[in-house]
Length: 242
Ligand SMILES: C[S@@+](CC[C@H](N)C(=O)[O-])C[C@H]1O[C@@H](n2cnc3c(N)ncnc32)[C@H](O)[C@@H]1O
Image (cartoon, rainbow, N blue to C red):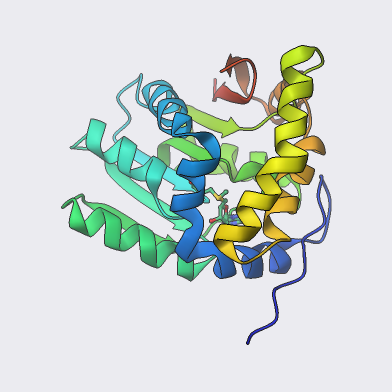
């Protein structure tokens, strides 16, 4: 039996790229099922809302970075049939599943292997760039944002969908309990990788709060706003390159 990969460190400016790759390669076959179970299907609503923001100015070209198994790319391609959509990720096992899903739906999505921190595209290549639940895993948040900025055309839009750390208060406490005690157990059972589903809550707890992420986006140059979803479990950050 192959040993489970090492759990990646969490937070910003951490050397975690290879551990993140190995972790997603190991959970790829169960990733979609676990997403549905652990979010009780609500992730679909969050993706829909984030897609509406990304498509608001009718981009002609869009890059979905850290696309994984392509759920967000599929949402985008379904809503905007004429869109030239590139979906990129640095884990081929995740991309393979995404490619199959898009093929089964006859969606025209170009899948490409690539590191979000060193994107293989010239400056100003895309009218919109999206990243759903991938940003938290980046080894360097500022580097991720500056790559987004670089590949965007002037006037283009970046949309980040992420899990902010749970807020204070009753709902936050309940959610922390679910996150720390229940989610890792279900994740371990279904995926066979216990570390991956302790990494998930730990990486969320170590992630900057929405105001801090908005500041990082502003520091990159974006005009930015954000919206909290489902009592603040998820957040959509919109950054316009003005
Ligand atoms: C939680 S999954 C999200 C996948 C998908 N966007 C979704 O909404 O379901 C995170 C994805 O980010 C990818 N990822 C993390 N860091 C990356 C990086 N530096 N470059 C490219 N992909 C990265 C992982 O390989 C993984 O597929």
